[in-house]
Structure formats: structure tokens, C-alpha cells
Length: 334
Ligand code: ADP
Ligand code: MG
Picture 1 (cartoon, helix red, strand yellow):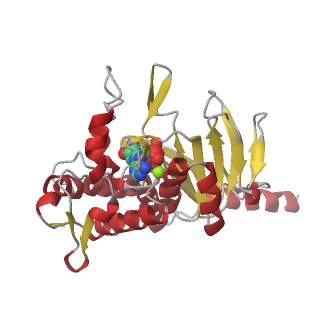
Picture 2: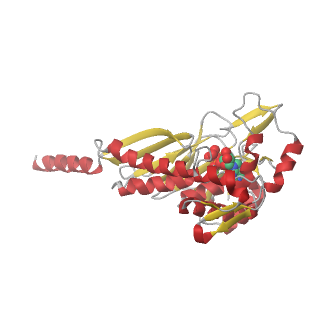
Picture 3: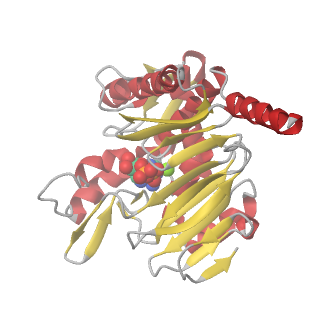
């Protein structure tokens, strides 16, 4: 009896220590941001708000569509001299330029100069004429970004250049969101922004699990269990695309050709750094399988799940114990 009572008290104590599983979502960064965490239910909305506020702050600096944002001012005036931006925007652009160099130009934030040619939201989407792409390609290259480190200034060496942080800012927002969550005292949780996520701690002592979508079926492909600080990002050709005369046009552009990358159907990267996971997912997507194999030899800080257009899968050997494949698929272990 005493034993049972003790056990009961212990159970109540453990439950109240761990708290509730809370999950709160909000539309941000042009996608759905979800905050999941273990903590006091009463403080949950305040805790989540700290994350949303931080992400809102980042969006107001880095969205090219917000009047007065760093990116809005830079894209308007960068061609006529240095534009002073926030230290965070400066650092992320600098980091992006470095990733551009190390990925052989497969990742390049100046591909934004082509954005208006590839407008999938348009109901009457039509692939742009080759001449229009060719005309803009000379301004797509991060080596034409000039940096003024002392005053955090950035300028464009060629007229018509534009920068878009769509392939890296979600990772940065997730990184900052997790920091905000920790500052609120949370030790176990997930911040997720439209497919990019980072986790801390565990789900009541068990690993957090994330599902990966099959790139060609309305089904899950795999479940991956995640350790503390794991950051996952996926770049796919199946979320934003249009079919035109049997060709799939999607939103990940090969900066070397100006056309949608024609290699993978989806690329998932897992590392401990959300910014790298996000940027490398896009970089590898553009690179294609052969270059990706070489790249991975030099980057053992990342694990990957690659799916090509014929739905063959290539998965890092290190993930073997952590991944359950839910579909009958062919896998080569990398
Ligand atoms: P998602 O936004 O679906 O998570 P990505 O992280 O791959 O996918 O980012 C794609 C976005 O990044 C595009 O919408 C575009 O704004 C920009 N982009 C497209 N191609 C590239 C590229 N090769 N390098 C850098 N940015 C790119
Ligand atoms: Mg990305």
C-alpha cells in the first residue's frame, strides 16, 4: 500500500515535472510555423509567442516583399552603391556567398534576378523564352556581391542583380526560434517552418520523430528519429511546381542554366545546424547525384536522404539505425 502510494506520488511528480505537450502554429515566412514543446500549458501561448515574435523580427529584416526591409532596400539601391544592412542580414548573405563558392555555384542567392520569369503562382504560367533567361544569367553570380565589413554595407557590382534568401532564411529562423524557446526555459521541443525543423531534448524520454513525404505519392516515405539539436531540411520539386506540356517546372533553379534543376525529386539534409541543413538541401538538389557524392565525402557533418526522379533512394549509412522506410523502395546506402 505504502509502495503503491509512493509510486502514485512519484508518477504525479514526474508528469507535472515534464508538463504537457503543446503545439501551436502560425502563418509566417509564407508558410506554416509550428512550435511543439513540453511545458506548462498555461504559459504555452506566451512561450510560443516568443518564438513567433523572433521569427517575425527576422522576416521583417529579410523578406524582399516587406517595404523597408534590408532585402527590399538592397534590391532597390544595391546597384548604385553600398546599402547598410543589419549585422544578421549581412552575416547570412556572407555565409550564402561562401556556400555558393563551395557548391560550385549550385547554391546562389543571386538567382533571385530570375524570380519574375518563373512565377508559378500565375494562372497562365508559361516557360520564359530562352533569350529572356540568357539576358539575365550574367547577373546571377555571388562573386558580384561586394561586401563592406566595417559598416555592414553590401553593393551589387552589376546592374539588375537581386538577392533572395528563400533557400536559407527558413533555416536561420528555425535556429533563432529554438534559441527563443530555450530562453523561455523549454528543454524539449521542436521549431518547424514549412519542412525545416530543429529539435531539442526528447519527447518524454523518447526521441522526437519526423516523417518524410514521398516525393511522388500522397504518403509518408520514412520516419526518422532525431537526437538533441538535430536540424532537418527538405528541398523538393513537388510542393511548388506547374506541369507544362509534360515538363515539371518548379522553384529550385540551377543558377548555372537559369532553369529548374532537373536532377532529384527531393533532398533531405540532417545536421546540427539548421542554416546549413537548409542551404545544403538546396545546393545538393541542384548538384545532382555524382557531384553530391563528392560533396558528401568532404562534409561528414551532414547526413542525407536523396530521391531521384525515378524514385531511387540514396541514404547515408549513418542513418540506418534511425530511419524506418515505410514504403517498398530501392535504397543505396551512401
Ligand atoms: P523550400 O523553400 O521549398 O523549402 P528551398 O529551401 O530549396 O525550398 O528554397 C527554394 C527557394 O530558394 C526558391 O523559392 C527561391 O526563392 C530560392 N532558390 C531557388 N533556387 C536556388 C538556388 N539554386 N540557390 C539559392 N536559392 C535558390
Ligand atoms: Mg533550402
